[in-house]
Amino acid sequence: MTTFDTWQSALFSGGMQGIYLFLLVASVLTALLTRKGRRKSLAPRVYAWWLMLPVIHLALLFQVSGLIVFTALIALLAFRDLFRLSLRPRTFCAVAAGFAAISVLIVFSGEALSPLMQSVLLLTLPCVLTGGFRREHRQVQNLYLWLAWASACCGLGFFGLLIGMIAQAPEQHMRWMFFLLVMTCFNDVAQFISGSRFGKQKIAASISPNKTLQGVVGGVAVSTLLAMAVGTYLQLAPVPVLAALGAALSVCGLAGDLWFSAIKRRLQIKDFSDLIPGHGGILDRADSLMLTAPAMTFFLMIWQTR
Image (spheres, rainbow, N blue to C red):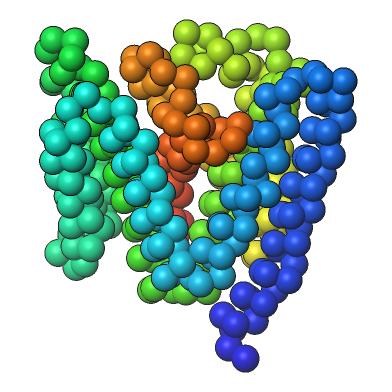
């Protein structure tokens, strides 16, 4: 058995069991918090993870090919949600195809571009739209949809860069990919449960009314502890580094959530769609990943040069 096979066996016999156990505890706490009809919105949001987690599990199980399919699935569902909101479907399709093609070319540029240059180019995708927001209202509606799509292409592009790193060093980078997905997913659960139970002080009422200071603190605290536990189990980095990274990813996840929430407020919608019960559309669920993936990419670029 190769080293990678040994790690994979350990991951899916121990790591995934731990994650499912964490979700089970969260589900039990949710059942207690929502008894007698209280906090009805919490239950579907937590329970939906029993459908989403196996999808992530399968993507990791099939490694590079599984993660590529996983990325393509997110992109297709994001396109579906935004296309249905577009006032000019044909124009949206043309613009969306352009951004998607550019992001794919950047990710698959190979040795033509350095990782740093790839990252810089991906970050510019949402920026090219900023000059168009003074046009008449009908066009502005489309521009915000394009901004959401460009942001998705940027985040998924960085996720693609991480997948590319796996091919170069499969064992180590699969561990980091697992770490990223666990932190991104459960940070949201921790923030939502903490906010539902203890939340009082809103931090961005005009953008995301449900976001509270107590929810953020709870999410950062749980993410920090979880990062230390998962990172130590996978032997990724020293505990202080893992703690700092866990807190940073939690904050980045919050920023991604707020970014897409701000776009939704401009579009005057609550969710991008009703695809996932309790969550909304795929971008309502994967919004955190759009900033945690870039953060992880930059971290690994620095960590590998130490």
